[in-house]
Image (tube, rainbow, N blue to C red):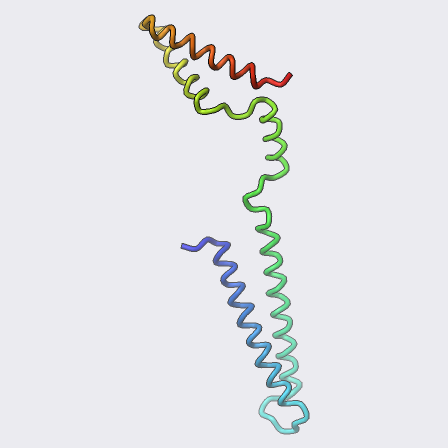
Length: 143
């Protein structure tokens, strides 16, 4: 399935191609009608059609430029997001999965501790996890 952007681009390409062909055909008819006194189409009318085809082509080019401008920053961070990311990075940024998992396990162990079901082995694990998280947090803090 094509995206909206792909669809717009495809339609712009088709319109541009069709208008180019129209312009070329009208240019040919205009050239062969020059200097002839009797033709089925009025030369003035043909000239008007040629000018309309040129105008259509210019409109399509403007649409194409607008489409390019519209999508030029797609997928890039805005200035606000860039600034926020820089500030968050200075604060230590997102913790690694290991630290996130350690914090989650600490919460589980704290819940067990509150209910009084924490074993000696789990207490040692909890102390190691506290130490791991503490080391990461102190290493990351700006000085």
